[in-house]
Length: 67
Image (tube, rainbow, N blue to C red; front, side):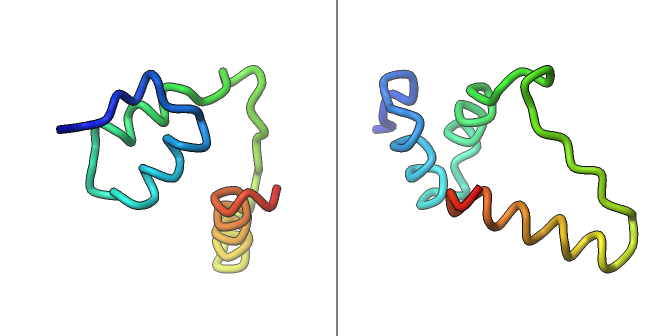
C-alpha cells in the first residue's frame, strides 16, 4: 500500500523519494511540487567536463539541502 503523497510534507516526500528511488509515482508527485519556472534558479554551466562536474556538485548540494 502506497502512502498518500498529497498529505506528505515536502520534507517527508523528499525523504520517501530518496529512499524509494524506483517509485516513479512518488517521484512524479515530488516533481509536481516544484516551483514554477518563473521562481526557479537557473544555472548556466558550459557543456564541458568541468561544467558537468560543477552541475553535478550543485545537484548534490541541493539534494542534501546545502543550498
